[in-house]
Length: 479
Image (cartoon, rainbow, N blue to C red; front, side, top):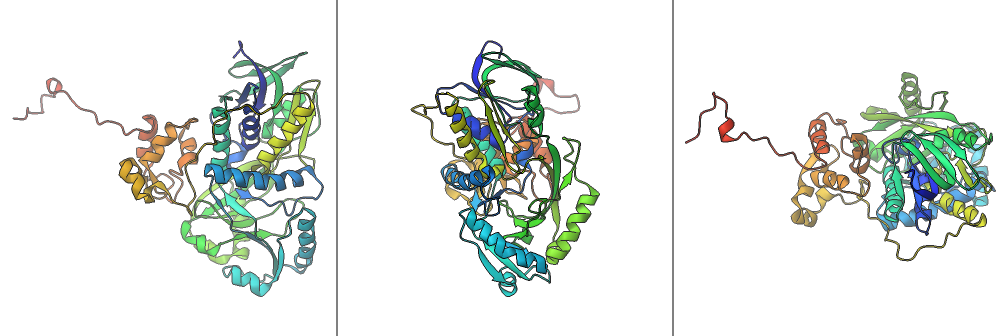
C-alpha cells in the first residue's frame, strides 16, 4: 500500500462507511475502505433491530431527521434494484399508561413536522383487533404504516459489493493505530502497514471519537450502549404481524416486539451504557429485563421457544444529533454519532458527504460506464428462496440440496457466497450471507457439514480414496 496514494480513505466498513465509499467510487477518485475486522458489517451494523424507519419520530429540524427521511426513500429504491428484502409491515405505538396515551397526539404532530402524514390515532379496541396477542392494559395507539423491516446484513454487503465493483479497494484487518497529517497527504498507520491518502473520511463507529482526536479535535465522546435482544422461533410470527413500538423516551425507542425479515419475532433491545467497547456478550440481567417486558407486552410470545440471543453496541454520544462535519484544511470529514437510524440514513449520509466534499473543491462528477447495482441473494422469508425455485434447481441441482434444514439454506447458496465479490472470511460471515446455522438448532445438526464446505470454499469435499497398491494388510483385494 505504501506505493499508492489514494484520493480518499474511508475508515469503517459498516453501512455508513460502505455507503460513502460506494458513492465516491462512482467518480474518478481512487477510494479505499479500511476495516479493523476481517469482514464488512461485522461491528455495530450487524446487530441492530433492522428497521427501515420513516423518520416520523426524529427531532424536527435536525440533520438526523432530514437524512433519515431522505434515506428511507433512497434505501427503499436501492433495495428494489438490488434485491435487498424489505417487508412493509407497518408499526403501532402502543400506549400503556394515561401519560403515554396523552403523548400520542403530540407524536402524530411531530411526525407531521417531519413531513410524514400517514400516522393515525386508534383506540384500544382497534389496537387489539390488529394485535390480538398483546397483553391486557393497552389504552390506545398510533399507527405508522410506512415502518418496515429489512436485512441489515444484505444492505451492508450490497453497498460494499457495489463499492468494490466500482473500483474501491477493500482492506480488511487494517486496524487504525494512528494518523500523521501533513500538508497535502495523510499517512494512516494500521496494523497491516501505512496507507497514504489525500482525504480521510471517519466512519469508524465506536472508534470515531478516537480517530477524531488524531486529527486534533475533541468534539465528542462515544459511549458504547449495549442493546440485547431475544429471537423467538418462526412459529411465533403470527403473534407479531406488525412492529409493536413503545412510546419513546429520552433513552431511545425502548423495548419493541418486531417480526424479522427471516420469519422470526424479536424482543428488545435493552439499553445499557458501558465502558468496554468490545462487550457484545449477553447478560442474565438483560435476559431477565427482556422477559419481564415481554410478559407485560405479549405474554403469549413467551410461550414460544427462544432460538437465539445477541447483543450489539451502539455508538451513543453526548450530542443529540449526527456529527457530520468537514475540515477542508486537513482534508478530513467526520461522520460520527450515527445511531441505529444509520441503517436507514446511510445512503443519505453518503449523499450529504458528497455535497460537503464538493463544496470543499473535490471533483465528484460521476464516471461514465458504471456497472449496474449488484443482485443480492434473497434472505427474506416472505420472498422466494432457491430451494423453492424448481426452474433454478433444474438448471443447477445444488440449489435443491439443503445443507441447513432449519433455515433451508442450500449448497448452491454457500458455493455462491464463496464465489462472490466479497466472500466470507469465516462462519459468521457465511451466516450473514446465507442464514446458514441461524435457525432453531444454531448449527447443532449442520455445523460440521457447513465447516467442511467452508474449508473447501463452498465446494463439497471429495471423499478420500486409497489406491490399490496402498491397501492395508487387512483389506483383501477385490476379484
